[in-house]
Each structure stands twice: as structure tokens, then as C-alpha cells.
Figure 1 (cartoon, one colour):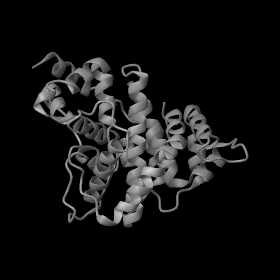
Figure 2: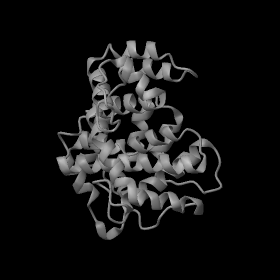
Figure 3: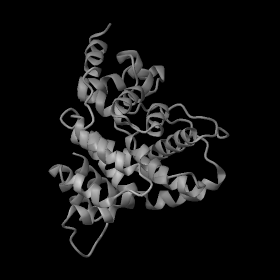
Length: 287
């Protein structure tokens, strides 16, 4: 067993636990008609989360001409779907101490790639009439969370060395991770999702976003994995790669349904503008 593998497996036993408040908020959001008053009262129990919500609502993302000053106002403005995205991403990313292990440039790339994947997944799924495009948005935002977990355990420099090792073998990042650590970032993300009690859809997307089902595969999970895989690859091709992805990854584009091509063309024109509105507010809300 290598030193990397030994220290990594030891670290896996110390995955962060979900905050109790998140579990209670998520339970309320599962209701057909969430009680926004009860939600806002719950979120006010967490001063940091309340501050992040207000920061997001007063950011250029919403472009409001008035100041949002209460958690109740923020809750109504965001709505249940966006609220879930913000609360989940803030809780998950805020619990992983990766910023001190990765350079500012790497963190910028990570956020741009994750947000680009989220935006593209939402747009593709909305165009195809897939269920709950906002859930696909969150799946895109979380799909590479295992990379942050690994970086927090073994350090950014060591992780980058693993990711760049033996490039002549044309291995993708997951293969490099398995050789050095025994698990890929997708599998590490799955472990985090299971520990936190993520909905099954998100766990399936995180562990399976590099294992794409056939187009004819049915079921919400298969559709979500396909959309996230397409969005992940398109994000790289549109200039927003993950900071740790091996250069060989993405040589073959996951097949797009023909009717999605106009969506891709629109994203080519608008993605950078959308990222400019979304990345920093979400990042500020998550760390």
C-alpha cells in the first residue's frame, strides 16, 4: 500500500458530517409546498447561512433595484428550487477544507467548470423537457465535489502530481486516481453523498458522470447522468476545464441529440456572461 493510498484511506474515515440544520431544511424542501415561513425561521438559526443568502440576493445575479434585508425576503425571492441549490452547495463546499490546499487559480477553475457544467446541464435538460432542470443544475454543481475532498486529504500539490502522472499512458483522471489512491474522485464524491444522505439522483450523478448510459436508457438517473456528462464535456470544450482533468479526457464528445445543437450554439454565445453573473455569488455563498 502506497503512502498516498494509506493516508487517503485513513482520511476517508473522517469525511465531514452533514450539519443537522441542513437535514431539517432539506426535509422541509421535500414537501410538495414548502412552508417558506418555517424555512426562513430555520435558516435564521445559522447566522453564516443567513448572511450568505442575503449576499446572494443582493448580488448582480438578481440585479434588484432594492436591498433584500431579511431572510424571509430572501427565501421568497429564491424560491424552493434555488434555495435547495444554495443551501446544499453552501453546506457541502463549506464543509470541505480545500481552499487552503488548492491555489487561487485552481479554485477559480474549479468553480468556473462546476458552474458551467451546472448551467449547461440545466439548459440541455430544460430544452429536452427532462424533469426538474434545477435538480440537474445542482447535480452539475456537485459532480466533481470528490476532487475537493481528495485535495483536502492529500494536498493540492500531491493531487496535481497524481493527475499529471504518466501522461504517455493516456489515462484519464479517474484512472490515475484509482492507481494512486484506490478510488476515483467520482467514487469519493459518492461516499460523501451517501454519508450526507444526498437524494439518490445526486449520488448517481456524482459517481456516474464518467460512465455514460446509452441514449435509449430510461429512468431519471440515467437521463441525469447523460446530461451531466454532456455538460461536463461541453464545459471543457467551451473553455472551462476542471483544473485537475488530464489532457486526454474529453477526446470524444458524448453524443448530443440533434435537437440540442441550437442550445449549444446559444451557450457558445452566452455562457461566459452567465458565468460572470453566477460564479462569484455562488462561491461567496458557499465558503
